[in-house]
Amino acid sequence: MQNPRILLVDDERAIADAVGMMLEMDGFRVNTAYAVGEADSKLSNDIGLLVTDFNLLDGDARGVVKNARQKGYNGPILVYSGIRENALHFTGMSDVSFREKGVTGTPYSVVSDFIRQSFPAPVLA
Image 1: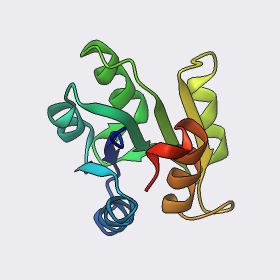
Image 2: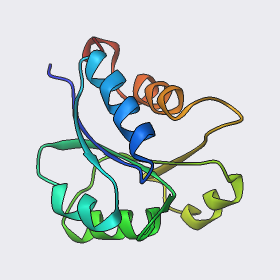
Image 3: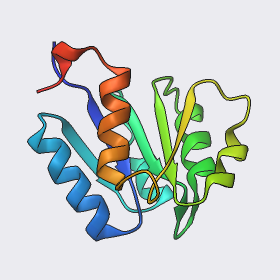
Image 4: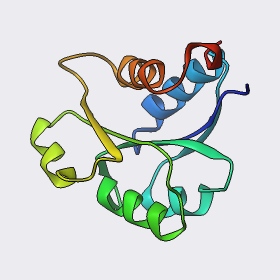
């Protein structure tokens, strides 16, 4: 079974590039976007996991999730933020998981822990 392609959205380029590189070293295929609009243009049928920071320069994760749903994406979504209260924006959305970054770990550890919980062990490199 092939690892899912991940669409990683974070406006902090250094963080996005570092997390993307580490995920690729773990065997995942990663598309990186740095804004809501760019994420929308990079969303494709082969995306198996959508991961986005909450706060983005041109909007926030609500826009990323809305655009993804409008394009027919129905896979898992992980939203991470340094602000715990941002989770309230996704109350009642069982298909969106929220993780706090900073206190509990780096963006990479938050994303990699979620992947390990969401996908069967044989998928991981």
